[in-house]
Image (cartoon, rainbow, N blue to C red; front, side, top):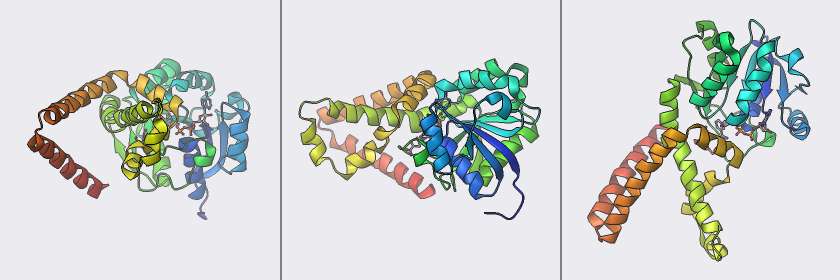
Length: 293
Ligand SMILES: NC(=O)c1ccc[n+]([C@@H]2O[C@H](COP(=O)([O-])OP(=O)(O)OC[C@H]3O[C@@H](n4cnc5c(N)ncnc54)[C@H](O)[C@@H]3O)[C@@H](O)[C@H]2O)c1
Ligand SMILES: O=C(O)C(=O)C[C@]1(C(=O)O)C=C[C@@H](O)C=C1
């Protein structure tokens, strides 16, 4: 813990699970926050978050909590955000900055505009590119964001001060800050995050519903483990992400299906040369990407 006075007074977190809880723990670890107040869907989750030291106390009524908050982080599944934004809007203090940790940005920005109206400058959208297949307060870790990227998707209305406020908080969590426009963000993450989750769920589901599923799971090994870790992720969260980024995800799915069709044709035609060519290009790209990450 730092000996300096905390940079932030009160931080309010809606959704004290993996992402919100890790943000709270990271700010606490950095000695950067005086008090973390949590809001949740169930009292049991908030009790667990408090017992684990993720939050200092559970909030009861946003009326009394939002106004003096330095930061309000909304880290629930994205479909919950419109209602939460509308609920907190009346109580925003002049210095309160709201941010989010959602995996999609176009839908979240639209919901924020609808709820915050002429207070939209106080909303700075963001997405930490760090996570896990585990969820809930017990999955939260103080070091989740160390050395990881956080993408901020600034709005034209955001002041430099508001932007710096949120960037600074994520930096204190150990993250490196990047900027993208919301549309570019959703296009990129449809390809590198949302599609892989859909594919992983699809493969495991295809096996799980077979009558002789046990036979396959008995012998599945490390290749299957690597490909399917993310199929253990939270279904509600991924339902919301897929629906929120439906258009971009459908585009990526079509592109992937065309790639599969091409490989299927090569296989059907016994075209080992083409298979090896595709595998070689992919291997090279994967190796150079992994070297950089
Ligand atoms: N899991 C990841 O790898 C990851 C990475 C980056 C961003 N995200 C995004 O972060 C957000 C949270 O994901 P997570 O992994 O922390 O999920 P999580 O399930 O660990 O935590 C979400 C928490 O929100 C609570 N919640 C749900 N509805 C609520 C409501 N209406 N009001 C208050 N609390 C509510 C849940 O009870 C849960 O405790 C999602 O929007 C997700 O897209 C997730
Ligand atoms: O590591 C994981 O389990 C993740 O799925 C993390 C992951 C991803 O890389 O796709 C998932 C969703 C996000 O919004 C950001 C990160």
